[in-house]
Length: 282
Image (spheres, helix red, strand yellow):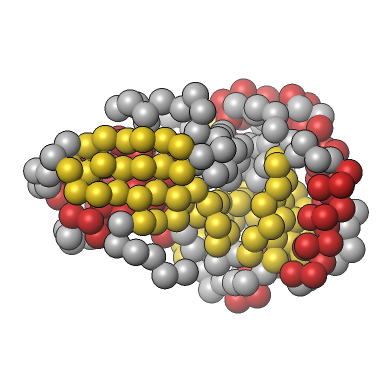
């Protein structure tokens, strides 16, 4: 997708698999995950300004803080400090993805802000510096900065980029039943059992043999998640159906766009209140 210098997409993130191995002494969990990114997501734009500011609009923008606690402004301030920038930017966020739903959310928005402002301010920032800025903001942010298929370990911010292979261009349907699933309580409900490592090699094969260890506790908190996964998995042409991240968004990979679109139409008819996004993987 061609981007204007003043616009950027915050690509929706999905966890094709997410293995929780243990709780770390620092309170985080040791993870092994496969990140993939969709071609669609939130949209950010920015214009030169004397100070930093953020305006939020879009179907999921209501109630979101546009103050200094927002990850977009925190990312912008961290970049400005690291790059020695003395000007600001007027940033606008079009919030098209559900909030706190396991598909990147604020992490993807912060990452998109970093990519956008590097261009707007005309600065050169090493990838390692951007990674460190992102990691300080959240464990998913470094993967979202790259927005390409990768394996994440540690907190999820130790990245190994993958050959997308069959993943690139694959048809995917995202579905969210519009229920809140806070990340912290989901991790707290994880049963602490290490069910084994995530396979190496081809990312699609690894995903198919993998799992999401946060899906059972999320289902316990919001049983409708099981209904979403089952609805996606029941559709013709499905390759993989699973919850992403800590939920409640679920996804399904399909053999082709026709199968995805047929699933999209069927789920829309059966569950008109659920949010859906028919897209492809980058």
